[in-house]
Image (cartoon, rainbow, N blue to C red):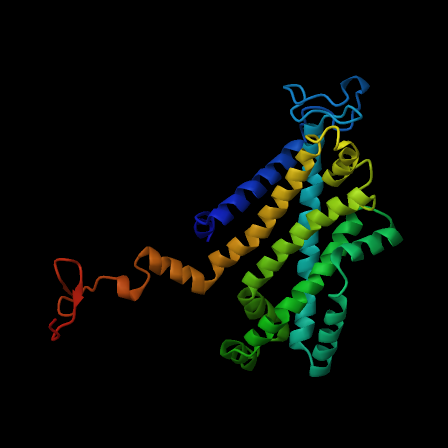
Length: 311
């Protein structure tokens, strides 16, 4: 699967960008070029140089060091939101697919109501009530996208639940939890993967947007949204400074969005079979040379003839 993922340009791009993000976040735990929070009034708005790779901001902080430290926040928010969305989505999907009829219908109505609330608005409401923090951002985005995942996957899960192998599993005594973990979730994995990648991308955007508005990570936490909020005031005078956090956010969001599509294409049997057939790797029975001399009739030009049939 990894090979099929990497041969796709979008998959290769997403894997490289996200792997680099994880590596940089790990490096930032032990090393940054300078202290990301150290202000130097004598180095305000310094141009990019070997000492300050991306320059400095109005307080004299090193932008490259702050961006590097902010990768930890980005990874934490993306992974945390994905975990919360997975748990909520699978739980609501199970309730909406494996329970009695009136529970399924009630869950469907509830999902239709909850999905109407935008993710960013839900996060703003929760942060306004409980205070701004990374935990609130993770929980709010995870809950919002968990509802979205359940609503999108409901039809696919119900289709899979009516398939012959699921009916046979139930008849053999497999319980609802076994059916969910052995058949429903694995067969709906491509759909879940796409939705989870979108949830993680939305989490990165939501954290940046909430920090920009003052509802996200606190001032003592390195965040790309905090940096963008600080630099946008001076964008007319120093436009290059806001380019770095904006480009970092856009690059990670694009990589997360493309990763889901690439994983879906790499794991979808209909697409992977077509790829193998087109590549001629011998997985298609019609592409395999026959070992029976009585049935294998190949002309010198490579075409195949059938015994008893003349051109």
